[in-house]
Image (cartoon, rainbow, N blue to C red):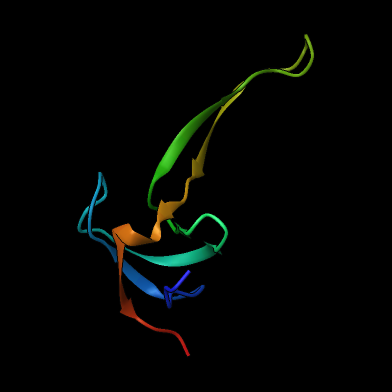
Length: 77
């Protein structure tokens, strides 16, 4: 992976559903060439109840974005 993006860098999404939005990198997945960005690409996960007396719930989680879809704005030292 040849990108220079690290945790804490400020980035801009340059393509996809979240094009034009800014965020901060919270996790870099080098193996998959993806990054996790705070408050961007949130998905809804429906969690089923584990037992009969439990209740299910809906959880919002952040999903990673491929590093080719983002642009580095400010680098952390």
